[in-house]
Image (cartoon, rainbow over all chains, first blue to last red; front, side, top):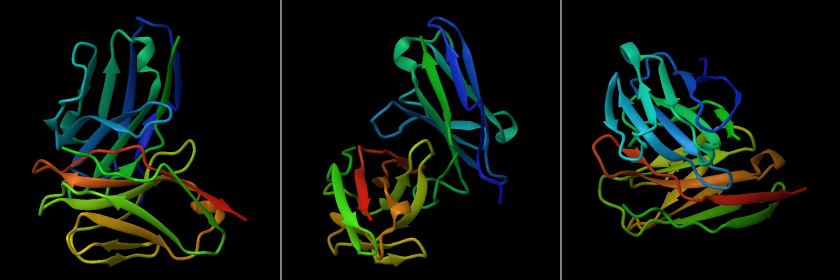
Length: 115
Length: 111
């Protein structure tokens, strides 16, 4: 089966600019996650979708970050405006069911550098 | 929602077994234990998960203590490709099963 696809692979922007990341989950996976991974740390959950509804966005900085999952399939994560501390790898993952007992399948991420 | 506790790093020799420990003393009855690993420049990769009893798959074995407050990931014969950061995760907290990653254990495998 095809894995989780993410694009772009790398992105360099200046602070205060906007950026968007795209994720295509594994076909049929109802749950989609966006994680942020800062260098040297474990991934931090930003937002979790069940189909096209948000079930957890408690750690999403909503003043600058937004995410949507149209038609319960693809998803985009946007940052506007970007700050230096947003430099990180943004990982998308999907699972067939809920994360408690369904393995997560991760993409290889988008590495964002904010200068 | 306390995270799990793992050693920062461990070392092993190639073709020897590796036992990676994890403490999760605040685990609830419905929390699953998941293990993922992450190679450089890649996203995390699912390894194994379990609830109460020991679990085996082609990659590893998961031994869960009887009181469920700790678990051990067992790699039966380490290879150089097993060198990675290993994350032990307590999956629960909500009905949707939030997975919270900690710092993980950096496993070094020596030839």
